[in-house]
Image (cartoon, rainbow, N blue to C red; front, top):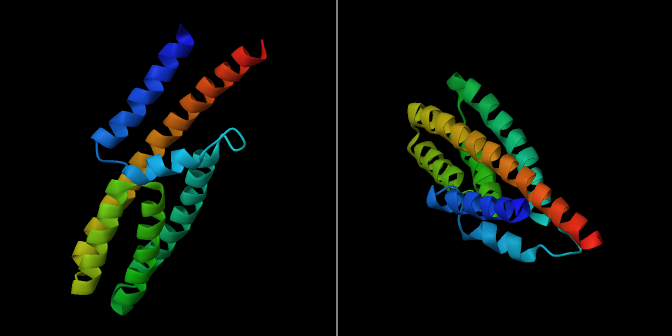
Length: 151
């Protein structure tokens, strides 16, 4: 009974990510690649995304600190990489903020860049927190199912 309830909670949690516009169909496509041979495939991809994102966020922060010598092309290139990483896991809101940042870069709008970057970091942190809770519940559901199969 508890196992079914946890599984239903997991499904509802994932659906809420789509309802809130946090994720897009790319996340589902990643899940379709997951199988019994690699049951944690999506979580592993998302963990790689976290590492890549932190590196890119740090690089963008460093570039933004050089306000007098701001290189919008460099900022755009870094954010293009972050956009691609976010897109690869289906991080819809993060990707939208990345694209807005890139528009401000092309316009040479430093204040717009600063504001959209803060929002981008906020969306990233929110998504990360929610996905970490999701994967924790998924592991609990998975381990309880594995325990039931071994009995």
